[in-house]
Length: 393
Image 1 (spheres, one colour):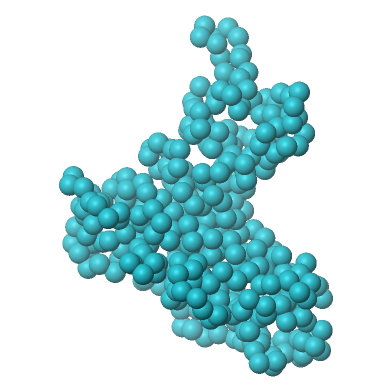
Image 2 (image 1 turned 30 degrees about the horizontal axis):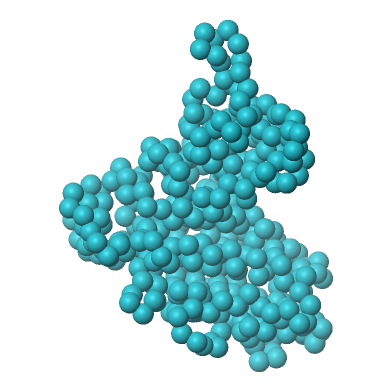
């Protein structure tokens, strides 16, 4: 599970920004003490997408670090509206089983300036801040429980390489487990289907995924009976690869015949998107992974978005506490109580181009009013994070 994420000096975010998913009442059980859903609202160009990009950059930096040569730059994208050479900070706190880890780094354009990994033996230790230093790196020095293993590796580690990655190359068990966690962290741009089409095409042919995927797809179009494949004469425009395309099968108007319709030409944008997302989502919910989705509601009816979020909030479906972090404009999620007030974040940008993220729960008024009024007041601009004009509803 993801517990906390913070970053600094990234694109439109100049100052340290934090997304904490730990519930304020700090229950003793990990699953009960961490939100499975978090929704980020804000006007266009407020910084919402940059939050999802920050996740993607950290994941990509770690997983792609082993392939770097000594001349390759770091993934360094500092605050965009002021020239600066300040370092980029990124840190994530997550669990593997019941054990919680806090891993982060500080990088310049060319090198790793600092790196650290801490461990909490359980959720109570995390809440009590009883941490163990696995390793810290900085100034050419390394400390912590793994210092003995890392000291001989440090001279062999390039300036632009993470020690976590070096440990993984040495087949160290904990490093392998952490790298696997990063691999299973999924970042999706929901307004772009191409990223997910191939994955869903492959998995809908597997019985272990097919039934659940078809259930999600039928949320978008209940007339779909089954799925088939069609041989194309030209490469699939989505992948440029094997000329085989998904088709959905329906009954004709009399119910006497099954009709298979080409996916690209006949399916609505919402149905296509639901198919593309269904494969990753079934896998994520089944395995208890974390997914970050930019613009989840793009191309979807509000009731369809609500249904998708409900897959995560329903404990009878989400047995392994999979997590959904999304950016959205869908205020109906608040109005219907699908997303609770302590699960809502806002992004806003000031006149200097500096983005900030803050919580709805920071406003005392929300504890005195219902979800309907919260949604209305947000659109009225009471909480900020709206376009430069507001509407009366």
